[in-house]
Length: 94
Image 1: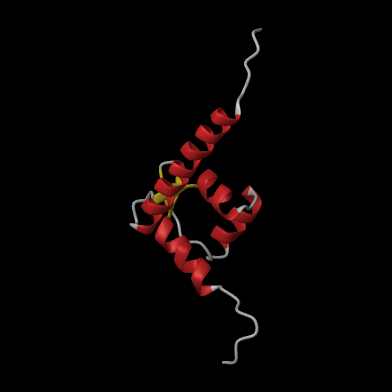
Image 2: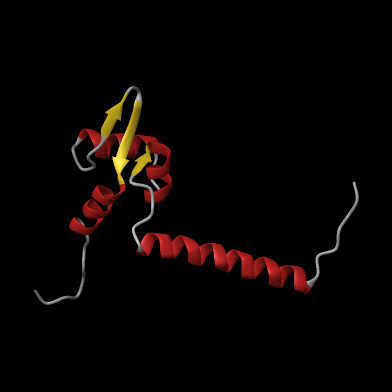
């Protein structure tokens, strides 16, 4: 297996490409061009929860969902609304 040498220029180019990709993702999020519906695996990645926790959130009504055939979909906007509604702010006088 041949080896290849990575130079600082290669790393700099990689960094610029990565930053461009991140900027594109952030701009899509800001303009609302993210996916409208997410599958369970995407929601688990997004919220960093296990399959069991996601199921509990469905069962107890915390996360609304739609089931089409055998696939469960979650509205990305509704997930954001749940996160906002359950936000805890400490140190505010209200």
